[in-house]
Length: 76
Image (tube, rainbow, N blue to C red):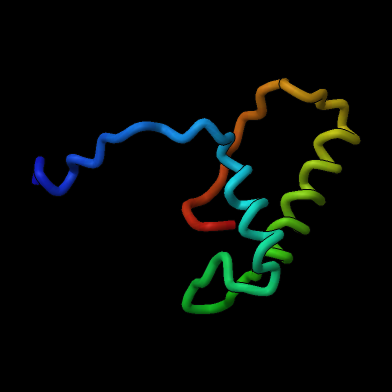
């Protein structure tokens, strides 16, 4: 079990969302998330994330402020 979990390695310098945005620019219509019930392209994923960002900004959140996340288990 320890050998399987031995995944230590250098961390990338990019922020978490940056590789996702890069992939979205390169292949916007490729599948980003797939579940047994549905699929979401990178274009759709970025659109959903942008809509959420707009709602947070409209509610008064400023850049750099932390956001708590409470969600049911799943990709949404």
